Image (tube, rainbow, N blue to C red; front, side):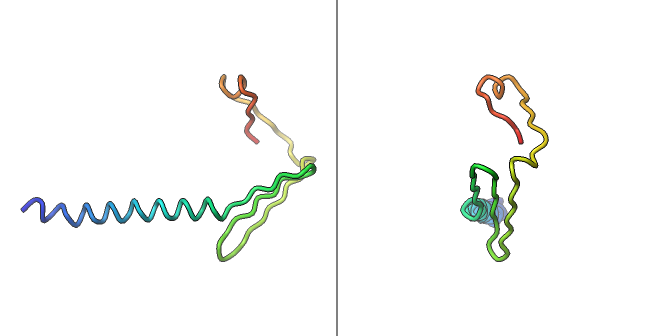
Length: 77
């Protein structure tokens, strides 16, 4: 009796997991980063494409936090 109750819940959880994997993959495939000598461009979207370009002159703050980031030279922009 308990198996009959839990079976639909298992199916729903598996379907939800598959949907999450597919949506994450599509999101990853539809996001592009273009780095040039003067700017960074981020392009994303499926039906409506949104493109943001930021020139290096407009970046005002660069913060390096944490021991590992300092050691490897990574920065959060």
